[in-house]
Every structure is written in C-alpha cells, then in structure tokens.
Amino acid sequence: MLYARRKRLIEVAEREAAGESFWTDDLSDATRARLLYAVKDLAEGTTYTHYSFDLIEYARDRVLRDEGLVNLAGKSDPELDMGICIAECDVDLVWSVLEAVHFVAAIAASKPLSGVVNDTRETLRTRLPHFVATIKTVLRESRVSHDLIDGRFVPLESLELHEEVVVPAITLLGSNPDYEAVEKAYRTALEEIHGGKPDDAITDAGTALQEALKLLGCEGNRLGPLIKSARKRGLFASHDSPLVDGTLSAMEWVSADRSTKGDAHNTQEATREDAWLTVHVVGALILRLLRGSPRAVD
Image 1 (cartoon, rainbow, N blue to C red):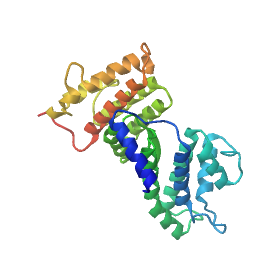
Image 2: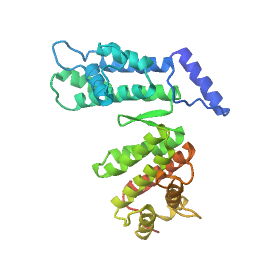
Image 3: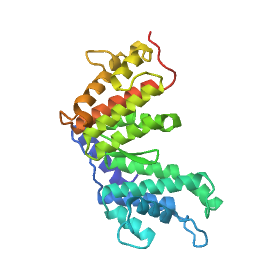
C-alpha cells in the first residue's frame, strides 16, 4: 500500500471515528479501475488462440445470455467490451460481470473443461482466492455497501452486523445442500433490499426463518406456530434469552412485523431500516438454530 492510499484510508478512518459516514451504493472511477485491474490480473495468460477457453469471453457470454444483450458496452471485442462495461456501465451490470468472471474461473479451476489446459487450471486455482480478496478489499476501502460472498454480491448496511451476521449466515447456508430453501429465501431478502423493496425483503426473511424451523422438525405452516413448536422442542438455551425472551421476542417480532409490514399484508409501509433489522435478526436466529447441535433448555 503506497503513501497516497495509506493517507487517504487513515483520513477516512479518523472522520468515521468522528461520526461521518462514507458508505455508498455507487462506484467511483478509481474503484471501477481497481476492479478492472483485478479482473485483468485473474485473466492474464488464460487466453490462448490455439485453445478454445477464454475466461473473459466465457464470462462475457454468460452475462449477455443472462441479460438478453448482444454486447455489454457497444463493442464486439470481448476484452474491450468488458473493460468499458466495468469502467462505465450501470453498477448492477458491473456486479453481474464480476460474478460471471468469478463463476467461470471457479468452474475452470475446479474440474476439467474443454479447452482448459492443466497450467491454466492451476493458475486460476492459485489466483482465484487473491481475486476474491482484492475485490473485497476494494469494496471495503471504497466504502461500497456491497460484499462478495460465495461468488455473489450482497448489499450491506452495517459493516459490523454484516461481518458478524450476514456473512456467517450465508456461508453456513451455502455449505449444506439441505439448507438450499433457507439460503434462497435469505439471499432473496438481501436482493430485495438492494432492489428497493423492503416489504418483499421482510417477507422473504420470514420465509427463510420458516424454512430453518421446518428443517429442525418444527411443526406448523406459518411462522407463529413454528416458533411455538421450536420453543416446545427446546431449541434454545437460557443464554439465548436476548433473542427469545422479553415482551416481544425477536422471533415473534419477525412474525408480527412480517404480518403488518410484509408485502402479503401491506397495511403499513416498510422502510429500508425495517428490512435491515428483520434480515439481521433472522440471520442471527438462523445461525443460532443451524449451527452445531440443537440447543436444549437448561
């Protein structure tokens, strides 16, 4: 890390300590350039005219097919088209491009593919963790309110809550195919927040909690009965009381909030803050419920 970057990060940290916030959903020119350099570093040497594999071309093609486009930024050359897209296109399309690059590289690094020689596979296997770490560093230093987790970009509101709740929850859910329904609902909740739909996010977070409780054998077809069943089954210990006990326990709050603010019963307009609160509480509960052995009442 060179002088100007060190100085800038120190100044940001000092101003944040004084109460100023720098978090943003936008990408500055400098941030876009650093993301582009990360892609170039990953792809360097993986393009061969005498082999059929081209990381940039494969990733670009995946985005084009996903979005129904003929090009990303008006260029026919894959590398130029992707480079201009990262430098200039809408932020959401940039996330898609980077996800596609990660996806194609991860596939090529993990198993034999037509046109991928062993040297390329080993190169990508070595470079991919550095690529992910670089992306995460760029986003954190630029205070971009997104993170790259398991190859997907997810929004974040509070860095501390994100690192302590959202990241562990997604990592846990992605590690077990039995958790697929929970993971899908939880990821959808995060995406709905990013898409400006807090009502849908609250509903999807409630669905994630429902699916987690069902996995643990709780009975009921709605969140309320499932919560009661979880209590009867002794899934919580006494030191879980900050989440369980009180006038309105955290789980019951999610159920009530989903009923009054979720899209299914939209009698009260939900805010982004409402959605984040729900997502963070549900993430914490999912971690409590699905990590390790069930927790008996003591």
